[in-house]
Length: 303
Image (cartoon, rainbow, N blue to C red; front, side, top):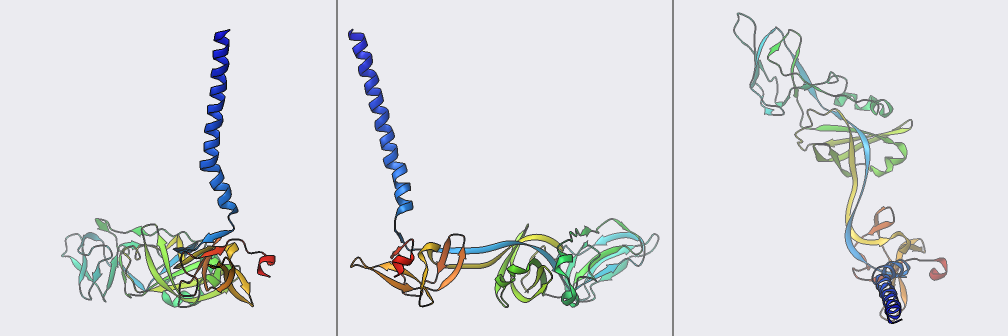
């Protein structure tokens, strides 16, 4: 009898312990999550917000390919993407039984040994005639033409003869508005990134063609021709808010801020950008970091 009573007491104590643990878990984890989602206000925080997208990129350069005038063994003197002055020897070709034939840079530029056959078709003069729906289908892989022996007519190297580099983005035409003229964007390639300016944009069929221009040196520019890239179209810092907190009053964007008297008042804001359910507004207005604003503005609350 005593053993059964002990077992019953043990069972009851175990059950009470499990109930206590479940209650503590609910108090520490579940209730804060539920109440956080239902909280009618949010505290203004300072932060940053980027908007980006993936686009097909075609690199366009002013460049000249140099071909072998004779067959022979090749000796190289310039490194890949090395800035070379006019008259500098790039390489020698040694025909059998003859002295070497020197190949020198005809103008100052970047030497590259990656050739793809599109050097004459994709140059700055062709930009106005390019079609984004055709460019997006291109997958051009340049070939490294360096080798010990060259035959007559082989490509030996190319010389990129301008410090201005162009990138042509092919994007759906409804995304063209993200690329305002003269705005700055960041293009992220597989092997690095570069800042560029939007110089032109066109709607052509189902796609828009965005022409970017930069004078910034990027080591792999001379090698690249086509690649899918990530383009950061905006990168702002300011005050972060949920989309549901922003409303309009008299056609002006703003939020309702909790005052020390417990009442809400409308404060205008300047929207900088939006990503998903988050809006970034300027920190230069009357809204301040750590202000308490209404999280979900309804028509009844606005009235």
